Length: 459
Figure 1 (tube, one colour):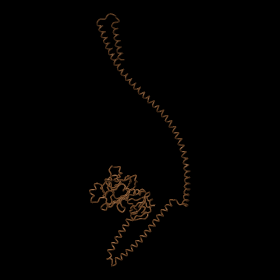
Figure 2 (cartoon, one colour):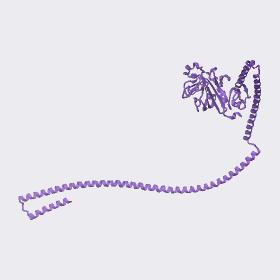
Figure 3 (cartoon, rainbow, N blue to C red):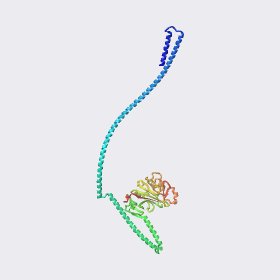
Figure 4 (spheres, rainbow, N blue to C red):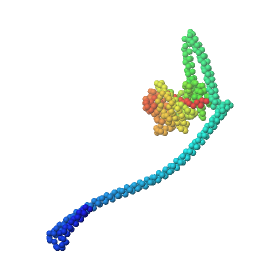
C-alpha cells in the first residue's frame, strides 16, 4: 500500500508540473521540454517498475502467508475431527458406563435379596442343627443303654474270640510248663548221674576204665547233636502251614518237618530254629557237593537233599510265601569263616509270572546287591526270562536266579574251590556277592531262609 501511495504521489506531481509550466498551451514544445518529459517518463517507468517489484514481493509474501494460514486451517480441521471423534467415543463410553451402572444396581439389588434369603435359610439350618444335635444326643443315650443291655445279655463275638485265643495261649503255656518240668526232672537225673560219675572218678578203678568211658561219652554227644540238628520228619496231620506254625506249637529243634501250605499238597522242609523264631530254609550250599546248574523244571520242583545241599523248589516256595507277608534272610560265609547276613521283605508271584520276586531291604551287615522295589523274574539256562537285556545271564553264570544284570550276584552259580578260583573269577562263574561299588565277596557257603510275619497263620 505504501508503494501505491508513493506512485500516485509521483504521478500527481508530474501532472501538476506540466499544468503549471504550459498553462494549458497547445503550442508545440521546444526540444528541451521534450527531453524533460522523457525524463519524467523514465522516472515514471522506474517508479512503476519498482511498484511492480514491490507488488511481486508483496504477492509472494502474501501467498506464503496464505499457505501458512491454509496449513493451520488444515491442522485445525484435523484436530477438530479428532476432538469430535474423541467426544463421540466419550459419549459412547458414558452410555456404556450408564448401562453398566444400571446393571450393577440391578445386580446389587438381586445380591441383597439373595443375601437376605441366605440369612433366613442359615437361621433355619441353625435351628434344625440344634434339633438334630438334641436327637443325636438322645440316640447316643439309647444306643449306650442298648449296648450295655447286650453286653449283659450276650458277649460280643470279638470278646469271645479273644477269650478263645487267651485260652489257647494258656493251654500252650501249660504245655510249655509241663515240658520245662520234664526237662527239670531230666536235669535232676543228669545231675545224679554226674554225682555218680564223680564218685567213680575218685574210685581206684577209674584209670582202668578211662579208655572206655570217654569214647562212649563222645559217641553219646555225637548222637545227641545229630538228634538236635536232624530231627526225624514229623507230620502235624496237614495242619502245619510253615516252620513258624511249628514253632508256635512248641517245637524248638531244628530239623525236617512236613508242612501243608493252604491250597497246596504236603511236602517236607528243613526248619531252622533261631532265637524266638523259626525259618524255612529254601536254599543251602556248604561244600559244592551238589551241581546247581539245573534246568527250569528242576528249579521249579526242587532238587538236592534237605540234610545237605538243596534247592527247595520255586513252586513250594511260592505256596509258602503266598500265604502272607514274609521276610527273606540270606546268610553268607567266606573261606575265612567271616559270616554276614541281610534281610528283605519278600513277595513272590506264581508260575504264570515266572516266579517274579519283589524285595525291599530291612537290615543286614553286608551291602545290598539285589534290586529293590522292582519285580524281577527267575531265569535258568533253558528258560531265560530276562527281557531287559539280551544277554542270557544263567548261561554266563550257570545256575538259576532272579537276574536283572549279570554281575550283581550269583548264589546258585558254580561252586569253585579256592585253589582254582583265580582263573574262573574273571568269567563270573563262581559263588559271589558283588555290590555296585567295591570288590565282590567270594562265598564258601550260603543259606536262604524265609519266615512269615503274618501271625494269623499261627491261630
